[in-house]
Length: 511
Image (cartoon, rainbow, N blue to C red):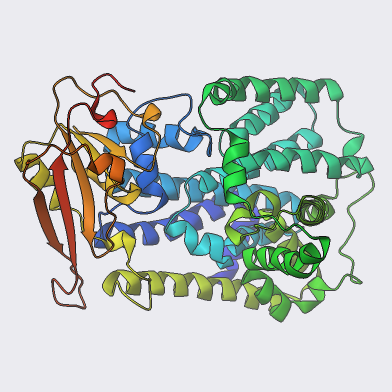
């Protein structure tokens, strides 16, 4: 049976990967849909943005993910089903693209399937992506598509393939701002490889750049006119170290931690099972003269990413390095690791490594199940946002006459769930810019909604000050439910109160 599977993987590595990825996605999607219909973390914010079509929604993130979500919601509505479909559609697409890239990196086509599967053994992907990541999930797809488009162009340069490359780069820019570092580094490291450099037609590359700019330009124009700026958003989230000594002593360990943390536990598994693959003295086979050495190119790309981080630290004092921000620099590094493991490892070592991936994926599914069955410590702290109850809040607001009102929530999780519960309402989050929202309906009521327990998020003073004097305040208490705990072991309490029609979020026609 195993031999038959390997033979099939050798004949069709991408198709095999897609089947495996689909099965993997179905398991995790079924877990999510079976236990909770609440919307949490990044999804909540995107649900607020997706109320309207727009060239842009915020300076912090480009719009491609929201566009895809909005398209799916036109069929499925703003509930959890659309988010689950988008999340796992992107995951399956990424797996197929990763296998197609790996097919050009490794010698054994079956090992390309294992290389794509290795991403399940990366915490930031095999665990975190099931809970959050929206624009980052889109980045993973567009970056890998860009790499595949570049490989295909180098293999057989043509006008058509140059246009596809340009389109991939343009869509990448629309997925996440950090994407742009990838084509720059790819160009630099490719020029170091004669077998690749000699195949590049600069007329084609100029045309590809034009296509990319054409696709990106509408959002770029929107960004110029937006109130926020990419630089300001970056400045607000980046920590700096002033002294050079601090940059070396405190900053370099942060760089190492971010890179190693991003590749954890895959790097640990490779080091433990195929240690010779990490020995720089051991060289992997060199392709025939004139053929691109894609394995070494990916190694160069990872090294260039590390240089970028160290330069940002030592030259500019940037000291904010987090594992979840490393995708644009090191997303393809696992394929380099797997390429080395496949070339230098024995058959037994490779089999054990693949089995380890299966164990990690199974463990993730078991822990994910346990989190839904017992939504409390130690599985999530302080509150499991994916299982926080909201369902009864919708009927309560609709029963009070607010089913088509403007609902002003004090935080994004509440806002995203209000939109799912009351699709006919206009939902505002005080944490998001109102410029991206649909206009309020003339004469519609406006209501402030906030959580008072267990995670109280009181209204901002300027918003609370616009509450209608003497208006009654509503309250909805919703018990938490869990198969392994008694109903009501925790209560979520929400309050709502009407706002004055002249409050900024309630002005009819304001958009």
